[in-house]
Length: 140
Image 1 (tube, helix red, strand yellow):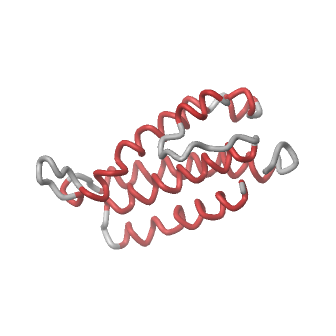
Image 2 (cartoon, helix red, strand yellow):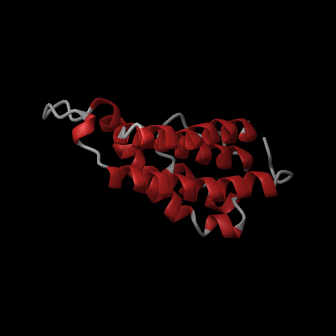
């Protein structure tokens, strides 16, 4: 399951460049969020945690930080902050601000997309290292 989630996350992360070329900044943010969610769920599965069926993995990461190797556990606060930030952008990146009548393409700019890509790359690096270099430790 961990490797399966990792594969799905990689596909989403690799697709971000397609959306950048299309200048679809909200789509970049949305897909980056989905990639981050799947990377983090892969990490959790890897250490034997059934991830919650929610989009923000922050609390699950914090509750289970002791299950991770020290080098990964040290980054849990960073990973949790990224998860929370992108999960907060998830709905508006698809639907916009419906209350205010603002579509997603007016809410997100290139800098938002670039930040989301950087965050996804950071999470990808850590989670890939965890799952692939520690394949025999609690893998599920």
